[in-house]
Every structure is written in C-alpha cells, then in structure tokens.
Amino acid sequence: MLVIEDGTEYAEFARLFLGADFQIVAAQSAEESLRVLAEQSIDVLLIDLRFDRAKNETLVGGIEETAQRLFAGDRVRALRHLQDQQGVLILAELRKAGHHQPAAFVYQFPPRRLENLRKLYGDVRTVPNFDATALRWVLGEAK
Amino acid sequence: MKKQGSPAEWDSARRLTARLVHDVAKYVARTARNIGAEPLAPDLVAMLCRDLFALPRGRASLVFEELARPLEDLVGQDPALARAREHLARIDALEVAVRQGEPAALARAVAAALAVEESVRTFARELQERTP
Image (cartoon, rainbow over all chains, first blue to last red; front, side, top):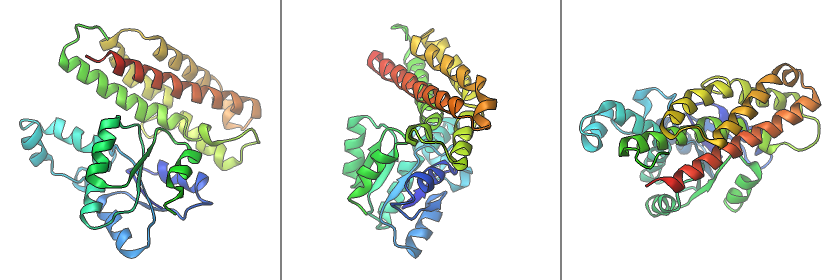
C-alpha cells in the first residue's frame, strides 16, 4: 500500500492497524509517489485529501494559473483550493502517468462527487473515517 | 444557519464545517475507532494521546475551538457542537490519567473521542440539510 499524505498520521494508522494485511510505503507528494510507483510494486493507494502542511512548491497545480483560471486572480483562494483538493490532484497525476491501482480516501464525498471522481479516475473507494475494518474490506479484493 | 445568510457566509460555514470534520472529528477518533476492550499496548496509548492532545494543529479541543467559534458566529449556537465541546472538555480533564495509561481513563477517553466524532458529523449532516 502506498500512503500519500502531507503528515505521518495515515501511515502511522496504516502500519498499526493494516500492517498485517499490507506492506506500507509512504510518500508526501505527487513527485515522490511517482518515484515510489516506478521503483516498487504497489497494489493500492491510500490518499489524504487535504494537504495544508505541504510546501507550496510541492503541490500539484500552479497557484497563479489556478488563481487566473478559477478565482479571478485571487491567489489566497487558489492556494486554499489546491490544498483542499490536493489528494485528488495527486491521483489525477498518477492516473495520467499510467498508475491505475485502486485508490482509497478516508473522506465522505457527496455521492455525485464520488460518481464524478470514478468517471474521471476509475477505481476510487472511500470510507468516512479511520476505520481499519472498513478499509480492509473496501481494499480487500485489491490485494 | 440563519436562512438569510449570504452565499459567502454559507460558503464559509461549509468550509469551516469540512475542516471541523477533517481536522478534528476524523483524527480525534483515529485510534479510538480501532481498539477493542483489551488493555492498550504502549504504542497505541501514545497514538491515542497524539489524537487527543497533539493533533497536527494542536490539542483537539483547541483546534475545535479555532474552527467552531467562527462557525458559531455564522450559524449560531448548536447543540451538536455543544456536545462535542463537552466531550472534548472531558478528554482534557482525563489527560494525566490517559498519558499514564490508566485503563478506566483510557476507556472514558475513547468513548468521549467517538462521541466527539459523532457530534461533529451530526452537525455537518444537519448543516448540509439546511444549506439552501
């Protein structure tokens, strides 16, 4: 399992509660994730959604470009958007690079958003909270 | 939320609520949700302590207040948020005993952590239902 997050909480949780089922590898950015995926055989991805602790330069999506495209030049709102949606933006990068492993989020997406994510990025699975049993179940068949 | 709230206020309320769910509810129950009735190993006690007293942005009760106060300015006092606040106060009061790994304190803190998550998620659901 490749755990992608801007801190260490997901990886700690995964090692303690999912370590018997998965070998855990961690990455903190899209770039690092791509490096891991190039070097190791990964069955599933576990991705944090919000990356508000990551350095701006490691975020997927340019602040300026996002500000112009979505927020009438407002860089503050653009950065907030990039941080809030970084997990999905990283997944998009991984899919673009040809990595189609099942991806799990610990997040309760609204049904229409989830449907849209699956249309765009294929195998996307979710659990609403850090529930190891539920995660094991939604990822079980991917092992 | 007051029905007459402006779109910008609703937007702020939704954003603060999403952060409350992500930054507090989800993380405060990260360990609590996954442990059984058996005595906790030291690494699990340490992880539980991080969830309750040292989240990435600080103590759970403080992170909660940072988000809940501006949220309450927008939506008014809410019973679910009040319940979450009470449970967080209980958790803080148990800190010394929890850090020492006392089983009774751990059990109470775990129950309170799950209750915080449930209360915040209840608030989030209700706000979503009221969103115009």
